[in-house]
Image (tube, rainbow, N blue to C red; front, side, top):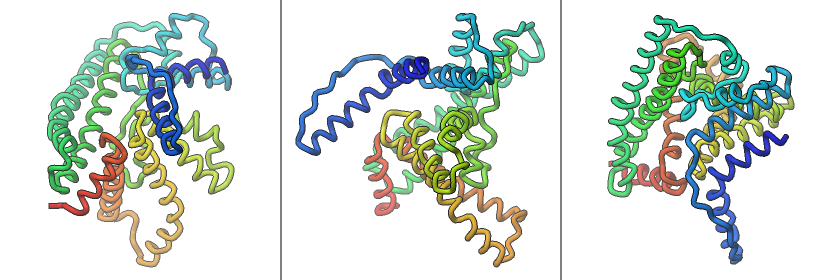
Length: 328
């Protein structure tokens, strides 16, 4: 309990204190109440969200008896702050990375070569693709009041590519760097934009984070074991927390909430959708049907990305309104 409280308190102070005080003051203003909250000018530690979650998973795994308690402080510190994946993941489990910390590692030329090639691919994704696309996206999102709605749509579609190459590139660099040193990190992305449903997308996107929230939040909340509506509630809570984890803004919460709603609505409509497809004799193996599902999933996911990229929730709403009223 002390480990959980300390880790979450540090994360809250550095990442969410400003967000918390801003909203408390705003709520007080709604009732004409002036609230004074202390402010701190602090720098956000690099990778704090990732190593905090890694530390929390270790605590939970030891508590559940799934991993031994590491008695060597330096080995534990190496596990928590393993530098290749410190900034952007993948978020590793103690049963994988901590076990490897305690194993001897000999230099493997083939493994180092493959790791360097994977790092090179990651740098290409990040520097050549993501950073070049970002120039156009930043211009549109920074001047959205002056551009047509079609430009916002195009920039949002390109942002889907940018964020994949950002996160996917970082993950490739991390996995490759670890491989050079003889460590194996988990796969973090698996062709996410070929997903045929929003649930399928989250089994492919940032796999280490998705599985972390599933194992340490969704399942402890009850998962799908306590009825349909409790399952939907747990799903929404998990995605809302996931959104807040990405950033201390309501736009991130909206992004997480949308992704949660997609899955809830999809599950509710599944029986009706199955009946309609059966009545129309639609073959689920048709390539055109699969392509349509992939396209629809991408459109839904990309719409949510708009809130992820927008400077604020209200700006995201305004950008949608401008797209609908001033498309050309």
